[in-house]
Image (cartoon, rainbow, N blue to C red; front, side, top):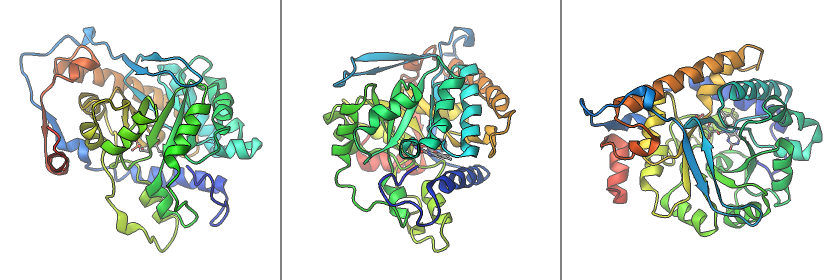
Length: 366
Ligand code: FNR
């Protein structure tokens, strides 16, 4: 991830940081324990189930027109996708290659990590273009950090022949980085400019601290049609940045932010189309996010773990097997819940517990 505009190299090059992020994120997978997905249950209806064969896992994500693209609707055959992670170094280029092969073989939409390194250092471009080479017909999302110049939007899209552009917001991560930004005052204007310059729809995404009701309202007001609420409880960039320096000065912020489920349940009327990510560990978490209002669900760390830290051949096969298993089990859980489609999941009875319940009560969510 960024800092996109801050000087590089204070604690090593941007390339070294990309490799380090992979190692530290994978280190966290081992201790992936409880999170707020465990605070949501379904009321079991013993006689309302449907035939798994009849389940349609496909989802439709509608978006409004932008200055440079018409309104439309993406149809994705699977309700989960590979979220933005990496690219640009030798190791992360191999990882992207394996991810892209798996995305091609399973039909999953796929995002890459921030392409800013490739826009600044053309040698790094192959770390991203490899995704389109391996998956010429798939749905691919480019990724940029907020604060980048508007002219980067079409460059990022062109680099991958991307169908959409993720713009990530990461104020908590920036705060924990000594070289990170401390001025977030122009972020709404920056998103507006990037969206105006993008030839494809923009998805604004948090990187693991959630999008509040107010943030989603701001995005609607400036015409952003799709948001990934990217909540707390999975890969933790506060921990990652604290681990990268001995003092760990911002460990005091541990637990900051909202989970994906809290963000979804708190979303206002008229919010952008909602994607959800952050802490998705299993197909059951996917279904929970869909039932709470997500149109589709992003997975990063759990899929990276299947590929492995070095991106050696064999990673794609492991991820294909995992994704196929997730599809099968997602279908089975839909059937158990009596849902033939994603929209049917919205009619399930949810029970909230613990911190998620407290958050919803405090926010007046019913
Ligand atoms: C990320 N993530 C990320 N997001 C983004 O928008 N741009 C980026 O460059 C990166 N880089 C990155 C590197 C690595 C190694 C990981 C694991 C993740 C964040 C990612 O998209 C997601 O929001 C979080 O990882 C939370 O999801 P999971 O991992 O809990 O499924």
